[in-house]
Image 1 (tube, rainbow, N blue to C red):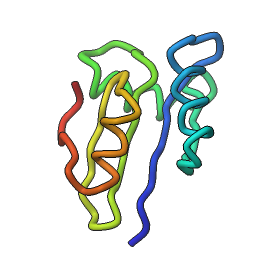
Image 2 (cartoon, rainbow, N blue to C red; image 1 turned 30 degrees about the vertical axis):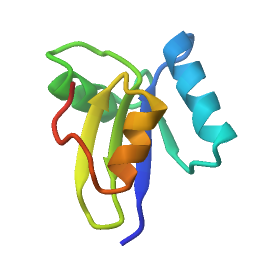
Image 3 (cartoon, one colour; image 1 turned 45 degrees about the vertical axis):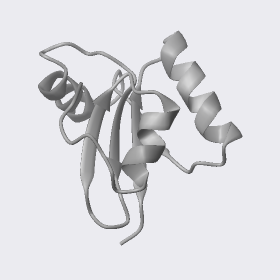
Image 4 (cartoon, rainbow, N blue to C red; image 1 turned 90 degrees about the vertical axis):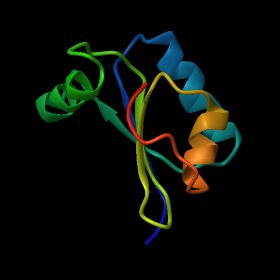
Length: 91
């Protein structure tokens, strides 16, 4: 299994812009999903963010298959999750 990072974002979000820039600068591959264009993605974000559409919300699946979902995480936290030492639930 390959590691996977999905960033749920929305246009105009400065936190999303910052995180995506950090991921690009470190060469961390990721998939981006605009929650304003994808109702299912928006519902997922609400399900892990206490009913709010808080972005960036990031889902990481490590190469070992461990999944972590994080709301507004740091780059360090994402990298830790990629290494298989994730945090599990959102927060």
